[in-house]
Amino acid sequence: MFEKILFTTTGTPTCDHAAHVAFDLAKKYKSKIYVFHVFGRPTRSFSTLVTDSRTGEESNFDQDYVSWVEEELKNTYANQIKEVPECEIKTLVGVPHTEVLRFARKNDIDLIVMGAHSRQEEPGATRYRAVVGSTMQQVAKRARCPVLVVSRPCTTCLWYFSNIIFGTDFSKASHSAFLFAYKLAKEIGSKLWLFHALDLTSRGGTTLEQKEIEQEIEKAKKRIETEYVSKMKGYDNYEIEVWEGTPFVEVLKYSREKNGDLIVMSHHTREIDLEKALLGSTVEQVVLRASCPVASVNHPDKV
Image 1 (cartoon, rainbow, N blue to C red):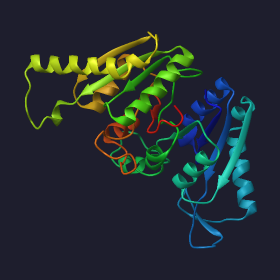
Image 2: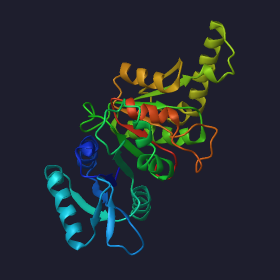
Image 3: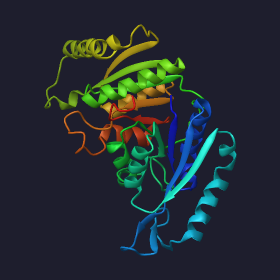
Image 4: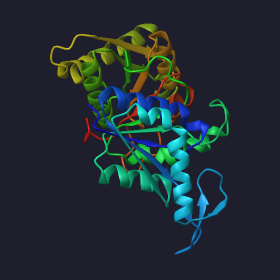
């Protein structure tokens, strides 16, 4: 299913969880995996100095420096590299998200795996919001293939995902996310949970009676049947659920209840143009707090 996997890394311990998932997927699907590191950007045109993307310090960029970094990456992931059929280490100078996207397009990558951040902080930290808004946000917004974000240890997905949670807001991008979730669930025989959080806070402060809420829930379930289940061609290992509440909170609660080991969503709110959207607040909060990897799918190219 994934012929080429791009694992983006800073080579630091904060990427270990993402590395674990990336190499496990490569081993399972016999994929070629690229271990990809961007040094940082030149301090000025044609300069031999680069601002290191890990430390923020200036480093003298030459062939010795490149060789040293590549050797460090080989040593860091030596055990994982031995277990995959094909691995290639790539290093570049530049703006990280730009180089990741360019490399993914040029090499027809099927899946990008990355951490949510590059700083060793707890996901619950308030200042984390700005960290998520950098490389990961830009890659998730523009990538033509699914982006798998791993921010915590993945204890249930060592070879396959058994419970895939697909969260939808019924946007156009959500359809691409559904196709990815469905294709993956069908490929590996996992359970697919089709979930929608009914956000009543967006109703302009109107308070609905319980009967009206139940009617809205039933309407959303029927929409899931029409837009998604009708395209599943006999696949019956699924369940539909609609909960009332704040979307990211309900997605996280639902994932915990169903022992989800992968959450699949589109990365922005439904009203915003694909190319102009920032990372949607729902997905951002899910990425930071989920106990399992989160796949952001925005385009249909690879699904």
